Picture 1 (cartoon, rainbow, N blue to C red):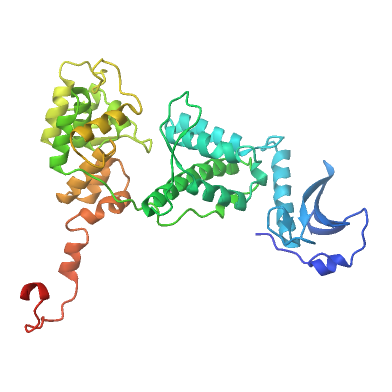
Picture 2 (picture 1 turned 90 degrees about the horizontal axis):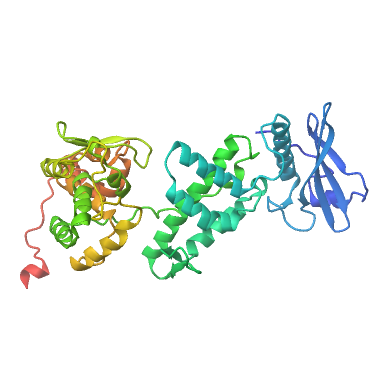
Length: 429
């Protein structure tokens, strides 16, 4: 980090007050070719950056308001120290622009997130969730702000407002107003969910801005790097079905949706992965089904038990290698959100209250496998995780030997015996 310089004339408000008002700023050189100037006005002053080079001559840039009247906020009102930092950022931006690394004209948050979505589409996945968050929560509020003028305070305020806003529910495409679910501030679980959702949106924003910064399109990453997400909001209670509930649910499904739900229960695969399965992905010899592209962008082979093997053999029977394994009753493919209403109806008929989402079938496979003693790493690999962190976070408490057995076997013993003359109230009643 560059050394902050001091100047007896410019360091303090009292020192600047003694300076005479003049047209030419009071300059302080802070590095070779770069200087910070103080232009005194009738009601406070302005910080000016000046850069000189043989090729381009002198160039000037207004940095911000001096903290002569208002206290420095690090964004619009700057101290002398903050003015030096802002001048160096501007100089770095100018240098990149001179090398052709930065486009001319303002570069906005809207452009950075749209470029990030295009990159996701080409290199990782479709980015459906990221696209929704960008167009619903990021662009309408931050889209027109220039990236190099985006401040930590603006992002923090946006994050707080987002967490306090009502959740958006599914609406018709031609709806004039979005369908919202009010936020009950007395409901701690509802607040946790909104904050967790706001954190995920913040992650998308940071990913887009970081990518633009690494490409030299933004001079500094300080504004968003200092923004902290909400803490302790991601530890949601995992909902899963018992074997009896899963059987009732399957019996309540229509035939085409029953096959889809059965495949989810025997694989733990996500909805999008299930709907993409083709006959060639199923290998009856090894008893596996190949997930070509998962959420992480990597493929994996899901191991099937005897029940799963029998199910996929029946699904693949008589189909060509390129055929989709799971189709709707009319022969059309399953599309995003086709499962939502069918799942709600099946839960109602199966008397599962509150109703669960289709994703709970993935949680059900993982939860029941862990409780049956399946090693966490094996569960993680079948689910498509690189390590056990996500499995430990969501399902570790269900593992019979994860903590409890280890503590009971290894904790020290001191020969402590309970007093025999003490009897519990319940026992004596």
